[in-house]
Length: 244
Image 1 (cartoon, rainbow, N blue to C red):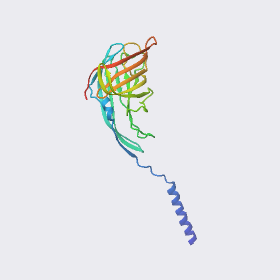
Image 2: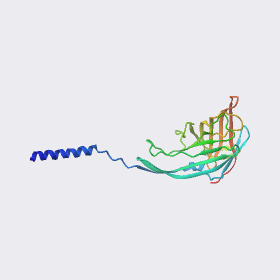
Image 3: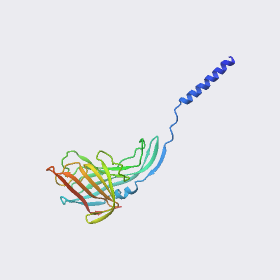
Image 4: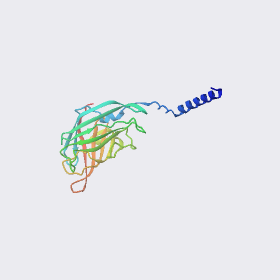
């Protein structure tokens, strides 16, 4: 083999190596470790021990509704994808109404580690299952009455019910008692509202008030009655027994 041919083979080999190296797929960057996300002060509004109960009075019908916390659990969840991984606190709860045997389930949402844009947010959407006073619907369950954290007016809860963080208040008087550190949420088309023993239209507009250390203390409802006239009523906390 001539010296010229040897040089041609060497040049060809070098060009082939360069071509293969440039065509080789670049390695994915390592997944980003975002650390740990705590529920923070949301736990002061939602996390209670089973057996906790609340008694509410309806301002329009004067009926009482005792709500018993049947389950409440919090755990640390690991989420991982090719682009990020992290741990976060998650919780869910269930409440039974002694008035009409409705069950309120709120399992909470999960965080998506693979989302194109990520922010640590939690939401709880309440599903109302059964109950004697479920007017104007034949569906076995309805959904609404959200709560989400962090408390940010630019964010919304899950679903189509347009849960919106409304405001923070230093205090609120409900049932003659002053509660402190109040957060409120408005819910458009609320299907999980505790229905009274009179006819009202489903999926009305509600405002939920939560107090730190006590949970839900008041619900305001704007709806339509059987005569298609506007009707307003509140459920207000009048007694509670909290297990922390």
